[in-house]
Image (cartoon, rainbow, N blue to C red; front, side, top):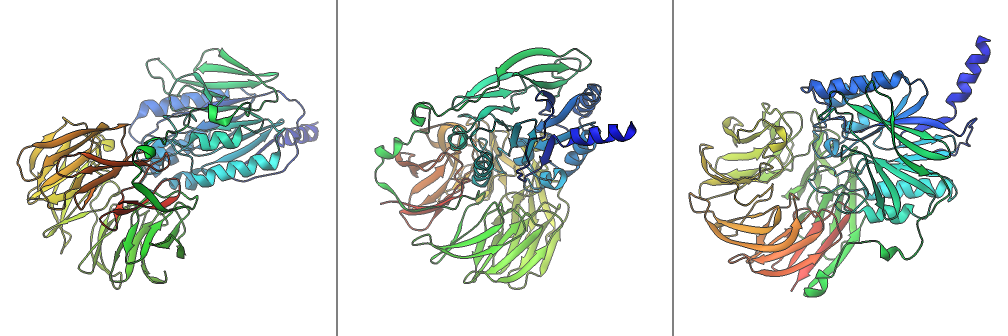
Length: 627
């Protein structure tokens, strides 16, 4: 009898095939087409918040009492800050489940992450998964954004993964798609690229979270079901979701210790969403390009690998790193790939080039220096964590921050360490600035630091008085002029500090700026792009926040950390939805606009008085001209 029970249990287990990030062609071995599964989302666990931890433990305990749950989907925002210790804490609790579980990251794991959003895969095995259960296929993938503050984004290589998986199973296979973000405009910038791929297949519904409540949407005609968080919110206890798959999909809210409450049903049937013309669904509007016809794309290359840093340029070469760990060199005139160097993980920063060498950091825990002519390794320096900070090179010294609590000065020729500052309590994401004998940068520990550039000793540090790490001045690249260092941060303040002492010269939140700051070529104006439509110029010479001009650029809501850059009296910046705006430096008059895609454009790099190069999170590298 015991042998029979063991064999029966083994056969039942084979009805659930799971492989994080891998594919299978296993045939369905179902004995009963009906089954139940659960969904946890938006756990927001941290090392300091005991309430969210208690809510997750209660959900695990409650679910273990159900006895007939086949598996659990965990759909993002498992942690508050995406850090390794919090991820391990979540896994320890989820490992107590009596059934299998499958997890994907949310924006709190991908935007704020000292590992460059790579620790999630280290802890949970992958950032996507595939489940085959009783005749139904579940596909799940990351919806970002990675490092950058912007809308959600499905990386081009993940869209290709979904395409291959669906093509492999065919159009009759019923499929559920599992994400964190809703796949719609305003939530995911390239939602249409994904929905256009999947609508021609037998997609039953999307599942997800992010909104912390039960909702039903339509993603270009496909049902999208958003579910409650495990957090208790205003209730005494938290909860989760149970799905019952029978002739229809039945959705229940399960509060801890209470009976499940049915709130939605969806008939399960063969369905496709290609009726009518795909253009009937809302799509990004490119009509602005017809108004400003002077702007031309000299060349545009789509390499279909996410890019999270700006390019660097030297001579006729353009350099950048990508999501799959490749460091690339293109010709500046035609965008032709000249060489590549492969690292072991994502590259998420902007390189620096000098003296025939190009330097960058990687999420594989290394800083690299390559020969700019052929891409051969000159030297590498191992660190104890990912390197997200962008390097700055001055007088043969590389200055770069990482995620191991350190900021380094390295010899450009040999990679030999000149000094290391090891007192950071958070990771460095942006590029530093040199001001006289100081190197200044921000970190995700609430502080802006000024170090002696020769010795690495701390000169001063400043914070805005807010203890929340998410308000750190860390994603902005500071600028310096007239004895002041200027920053903007997620607290919505524009701040000027005395370079010598770190003392506040002025602070204002009148403009609702966020993580964008730029300096005029003559050092007299400091620019920022506001979170709603406006671009502002402030007098950099004054000891008060004197506004020189402020214009309505009509780009809508935006929080992309793209720095305004001036060249030949023209200030250029770009939004999270691919719109570039150029204004006249002296008065803010709009000179031209151009829309290139619908995703984040990183800080643009001028290569002449009229031409600019850029990269996007969707894998596009382009050269544009406004002659």
